[in-house]
Length: 419
Figure (cartoon, rainbow, N blue to C red):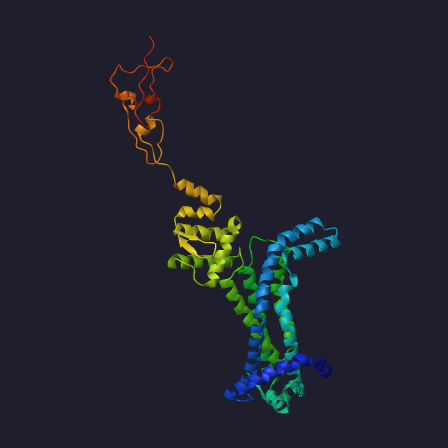
């Protein structure tokens, strides 16, 4: 174990140094030998690491969404080349290259965390064995061995024997109760994180084997944490529980403010955004403008929730602009940014005015601004004196005005009966 620790001293030394620096601060507040000082030092280490990993987390989100978008194409390739695995792999790599997608990007935060997790495990294991490591000297080693969290030493494990626990000045019952509770909380936080991802932030229009794999991982990961957790020291459990809680909170923030298109979370977000925009008459902040800009840029490719959002703005007299802002305008202007259905609805709202009887008799509607006057020759035939009408042969005595009468208007006079 010492040989392995020495080989990875390039990472164990920085990790131990960060813990010691935080311990100096918390030790002045709570006492250098307390569990609060050492426990909060580990929690602070997690926060520093996760802040540094935020850019990788953003890449993970983009990669995961890109993979969800490619699932239909990947399924077609699998069906087309199901008997040729080599060609199938080549087409998959070609698809990744064309779209700029990397399947491993979704695992970047976990891969980046693993060296720190490995280093912390060796630091705490060395403390349990009474060995100095990194910048932790003999005095700090003795202080860390005295530190207890709710009666459990930082270096104790669930599988330790009673003699090992006694050497750390603790009872086996306390150690197992504390570690069991922490393992359950660690597994539960992992399950809830994966569950909220699957139930809220997944495009429900895409049904592929990738979705089934994600559902399976929702149950596999918590079981893995429970199995391996019994072999982790209490300090490592503190580290892993803290990072799970951080991941859960970070994901809740992303789901609330930047959900996956087509997901239930996007429907809820656009509903909240619609209320804010219609209330204030404008978009506020870069985040809202970026969302509106992306929706406008999609054009006819908008999903159901995005079309509903654009239509809601038009009903409120607002029009989404290409730069992500909104402007006041008539409902008909949405034709430029909506699909054919919105154009048809605008056309239905612009029905022509009903023509008067004089307009019908004069030969149809006039141009805008043109005055309508009836000359003597344009007067209705039934308004002329009886006998002045000269019916043309072949039309059964029907006048032009009578033939233009509507069904709901005055009844046409009957033609003379033949004797």
